[in-house]
Amino acid sequence: MTDLTPPTTSNFIRTIIDEDNATGKYDGFVHTRFPPEPNGYLHIGHAKSINLNYGLAQDYGGLFNLRFDDTNPEKEEQEYIDAIMEDVRWLGADWDGRLYHASDYFGQLYDWAEQLIKAGKAYVDDLSADEIREYRGTLTEPGKNSPYRERTVEENLDLFRRMRAGEFDEGSRVLRAKIDMASPFIVLRDPVMYRILHAEHPRTGNAWHIYPTYDWAHGQSDSIESITHSICTLEFENNRRLYDWFQEALGIRRSQQIEFARLNLTYTVMSKRKMIRLVKDGYVNGWDDPRFWTIRGLRRRGYTPEAIRLFTDMIGVSKANSLVDYQMLEHAVREDLNVRTSRVMAVLEPLKVVIENYPKGKEDSFDVPSFPQDKSREESRLIPFSREIYIERDDFMEEPIKGYNRLAPGVEVRLMNAYFITCTAVVKDSAGRIVELRATYDPATRGGQSPDGRKVKGTIHWVSAEHALPAEVRLYDRLFIKPNPEEGGEDFIENLNPDSLKVVDAMLEPSLATAVPGDKFQFMRVGYFCVDLDSTADRLVFNRTVSLKDTWAKGK
Ligand code: ATP
Ligand code: MG
View 1: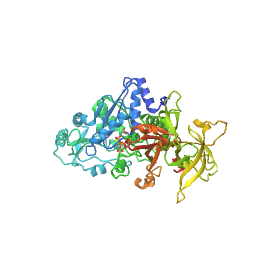
View 2 (view 1 turned 90 degrees about the vertical axis):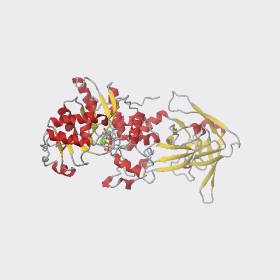
View 3 (view 1 turned 120 degrees about the vertical axis):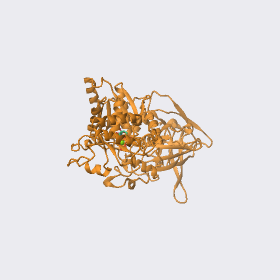
View 4 (view 1 turned 45 degrees about the vertical axis):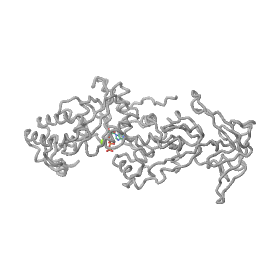
């Protein structure tokens, strides 16, 4: 098999790691993590982060952890936890037993919070959420101190312990870091570390009545796990100051937060909240709908982990936000499937052709290589031929337009790997619709070879009608009609593509009878297809992963 792995290209994160290794900052060690919040399913953007973090650990001989950032018990569900693990594993990122949860550290985080209180670096605040926002100031105005900021250590400890014990109502108090209400960085204006939530947590149950914020939990979890390079997306750039402040104030093992640009992809919405809406309101058929850019949607659609890795390598990592064209993703999957798939014949919109000079009841077969793209593979299969075949409806034109090279009355074409045929008559129903063609074949052209140097302009695929396997084929298009579904502040639901799914009754070559869900093929001249989960021996169901060429640009 051709190796599709692109050479490792450098990027600014590698440059940072190389410098750290040169100075011995982490004794030359690289330890990364992927920290999903279990409040939704993983999507192609997460794959970028997973492949980046796992890839760096691999390339530098380091370690990679999977850590659930489960600090928000109200939105988190076990269903998401299970699905995320399955998807990370499927993508090929191996956490090698290092599966952690921020909730594993609730006890340590609590102790560290007391440490900060005792050091005069944290206090319990009774301002309401609205008041805290008001006191925080703006980018141009400094904030002002809370009237509770100067509580004594004893009072703070007492209140904080009672917060933990569940004595107070939600929203009545928070624990805040005591930093600087006039800092030019709003994240440093006494950020909230804990809020009161009388919520049941999927892992810690009812043990806690206070839950740490992202900022308080994240860097400390990194430190506990001895993460060296904590890679996150650009919107956390300012939070890095707080990340560093906490680790320094606690005097714990340091790690380095590095921000990169998140993946934005045309024709998608990447926010979990919006994706949940698409599922809950039934605009897609669940999280694994093949039109969805979730990891499981892409998998069901026929993408492989290698195709996704090729894509994430192609787009690289940078510090500048950009919008990636969906065609890049499709390019990657075509590259991958081109190498790995066998070639078969399938007719998506069948039109019957009766070959009148081919004897009734006669049968013929052709031994055809299955991997013609790969000279190292010798597999082949027998394709049966008989008097009646199906061809693609759009491989025939009764009145061919200029430049049309396929079948037309009186025109000779090659049936791929079989014979030359010439169309002799067109049969129509009472409504004038073409229902059948009549043709003759030239026995001297067996295997599709010209006996006398005679040329035909077109080669078309076909299946023998008698041997054909009927199948349901699902043809997908973009879920949205606009590259930016939220253009001009529109609700993305308005821009759903009503034709994102089209189902056809296709006819396949008989070798596909044994295909099972997940199997992938190139339907020659048509595209890449895979067997869907819904497929059974009685009713084969295929998904179109991607057409052979980009047809979207032509407005299809
Ligand atoms: P939300 O949609 O609520 O903003 P999220 O996508 O940030 O959530 P997380 O579970 O916090 O979800 O993400 C886990 C990790 O994946 C984070 O480190 C985050 O930076 C990264 N990540 C999320 N979306 C993208 C993206 N589009 N491109 C690259 N990395 C991403
Ligand atoms: Mg997030």
